[in-house]
Length: 247
Image 1 (tube, rainbow, N blue to C red):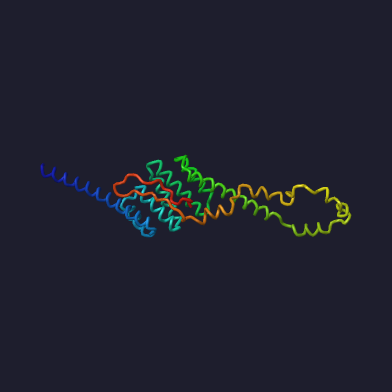
Image 2: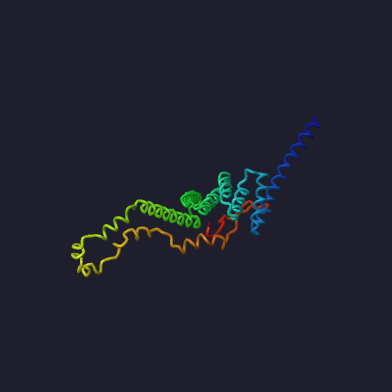
C-alpha cells in the first residue's frame, strides 16, 4: 500500500515538474525571440517564436510576437494569420485590442483600407482612448474614400464613348450661332471659373494630400515602439504599437 502511494506521489511530482519545465522552456524561447527582434533579426526571432508555439500553441504571446516579426519582414499574409490566432487566444482587453490594431496595420500594407478600418474600429471598441488606433482608423477611412472616388471616376470615363464624333460635330456648328455669341464676353467677366470642371472640387474633397500619404506609407520603419513582450518572470508587457506610423 505504501509502495503504491509512493509511486503515485512520484508520478504526480514528475508530471508537475515536466509541466514547469515546459513552461520555462516556452518563456525562454519567447525571451530569446524578443532579444533577436530587438536586434532586428526578424528571421531569427520568427524561428524562436515558432519553437515556442510548438511548446505551447495556446498562448497569446508567441503568436502575437511572431506576427510582429513576420510583419517586419513584410510577410503580411503570414503575419495576418498569426494576429488572427492571437486575437482569438487573447484573454485580456489590451491583448485583444493590440491584435486587432495590428490586423488593421497588416491590411493597410496589403492595400485593403476597408478591411483595415474594420479592424481598427473593432480595436477601438476594446480600447476607445487609444489615439494611435483612432488616427489609423481616420487615415484608413480617407484612403477608402479616395479609392472609391478613383473607381467612380474610372466608371464615368468608361461610359464616355463617342466623344470624338460629338466634338467634330460641335466644331462644325452654325456660324450664325457663333456670330450671335460674339461680343458677350464682357457680360461673363467676373464669374467663377468652376464651370470648366464641375467635378473637380467634388473629387478633391476627402482626398489625402500626397505628401501626407507618402509620409505615412514610405516611412514605416523610421520610428518604432517596442513590440509587446513577456520576458521571464514578467506577467505584463508594454502596450504594442508595432510602428509609430503604425504601418
